[in-house]
Image (cartoon, rainbow over all chains, first blue to last red; front, side, top):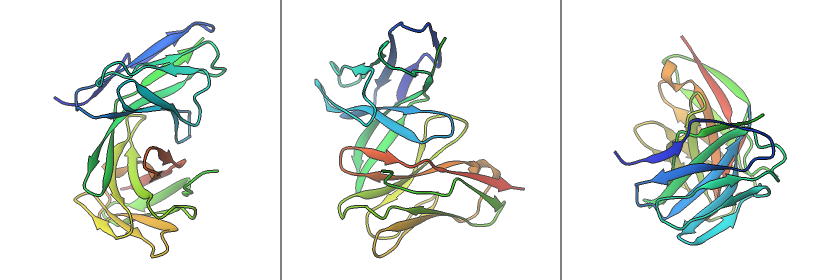
Length: 114
Length: 108
């Protein structure tokens, strides 16, 4: 089945540790995105990548880093510089459809920093 | 500044039409309006999108005002499974800007 995989679903880390969240897609989509969602809030863009080896900061990139070495993979590292990392993280990819783009989301990773 | 504004919550009786409004008064001429919904903190699911014209698919209809400053998502016959948070989104060409969403509760 084609889709976006995020692992693990739940992740716990101690404060001060870096942690990397996995995102893999087999949809052959060029563009990929990372969002953060806090309770009762909408999604906020952290980073996005429109092609391999290129990525752009979103609205809340501070304390995060990404890489895009392969088309199908877009891992997100939450560094110790991120002041409040506990959140729900969603990865997405997009493809051009008739009259625009459609964005597909993974199931998300819930990160808790203790 | 938020690109979209939505009411935080709405109720709808099962079997009736659910009309979810969205304001996007600063939208530019080439920016699309998208609607997604999210159930139980899963990944959001695509519903519909449009630029200027009204759109309809098997899930919903999208009505965009002539000045493009607002739109309405219509679920024609709401079911209990439609209970979710509905997000109105502006797509600028490289970013999708999510609002804070409307929590729709479909009541039996």
